[in-house]
Image: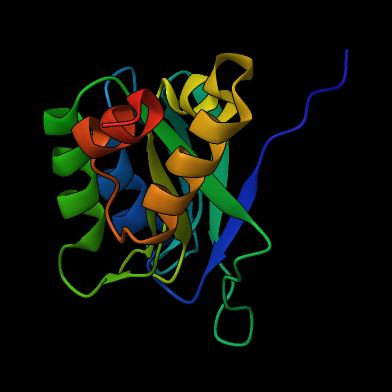
Length: 153
């Protein structure tokens, strides 16, 4: 059966990025590195949270865009803070509504796993509007503040 594997291009840091990501998330590992004759990493196969990926050093001219991004769902504020801070480390930049670019320019959104429930408001359009308004004012998401907005506090 065919499979689809996300394939990420980097200028020249595919191996460093794959190693960094696999150290950040559980159930993750670098599976293999194909190298050029001079020993430079060319294609890196890795697994993040059980999902296979490939990364390649494709040289300049292929920057990441927000059109391909990753969403990470976490259960607690401590985990959200840990992942957020790690993805921002060494040159990442925060955006808005839980979005950021990591040091390689890859877009990530770090969200609470209950975000879908919070956004639907349990069928309450007012709760939905409050959560949406609260999220729009945030850069890094604040789970207790989103829960309070959903509850109308």
